[in-house]
Figure 1 (cartoon, helix red, strand yellow):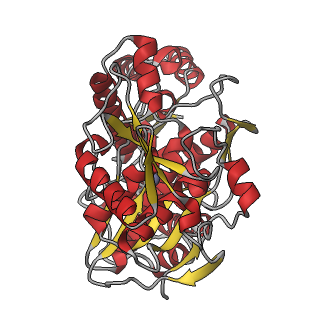
Figure 2 (tube, protein in one colour; figure 1 turned 180 degrees about the horizontal axis):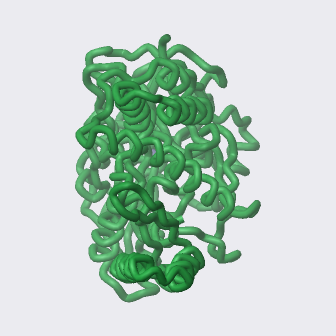
Length: 463
Ligand code: ZN
């Protein structure tokens, strides 16, 4: 079946038809790099990673661009507050972001442009907008003239009053219209700035994405993604700048947005103090469990993050890895099948229906668990692994999955301590000291270690 995606522009699920089936092009707004990624930042990265994997399964070439916003007032504020150099903050945070997303099984996009390396392209685009009468310079600033674009507002479908209220536009004497937005602004000497025809300054956030997208994907392309909160003003303004600069009737064909995320039923915010970073979560569970939890609901639905939800994800993956481990016990060289199981791909082709894909994944595990002959077990496990790979799951070795150890106080016994206890238990049994053997087993159970006595001796896992 063809791929269907919900398009925010039309508010409808539409069949995906690429402009060039030989090269499908997608842009997703990336992080502003000034702090560790929180779980709300991780959601779009994981959701669009699934879309990227599906596109790669369907088309010969996919060009996926996700930017780093490394010039922004939030970064400047952080530098002021901490005394750390701006370049140090952005480099460290960029690296941490990539590491965290890697732990969540997020493939690196084909191009990851940094805003500070594309200032010339931004200035050129602003100059074009001024030439075409869509922007004006005033008082060291350059502003986009919203009234110059008659069909402004198509994506967010806001009327003029809502536009002005929603933009939270500060009253500024240099603005000709309250809805006009900033393309360029002056920089004081102590914050980053670049020479421009309008003096030393820095770009507004919206123009960054427009300029980087234009350079790597062209004037028109297939899919633009991001979180729901970016529809207005960020994406609306990206459309305005890009279309007015290029003179094209459209910009991205399909606008795909993931839903909001709350934590324990509350909006995540610094003031409430309930920001959950990926870094913290990685100390509690393996990265794949975080990924599973992010994909367990449909991407367009709101997601309420909770520790119970995360535990369920870990348990669900334990079940899948149990099936994989059984397959590996029959054939240690088992690998994902070349073809993705039809029903899993079909679920994802239906606007990335990950809950349905997960249900099929568990059916495949059930089939693998029920398989009797070695060849049946191998075939079923290969299918399960192929489905897992499309979803970015089941990439770990089952033994290390089951022995994964949380950080800090919750870490419990180390691998060496567990091995030593198992050996002591074996010695006790040999000496027919069953009371001692039972005592050790109880101690391990208490510590959350599950023993599995088999023909080749005792193996263990963290439960
Ligand atoms: Zn953007």
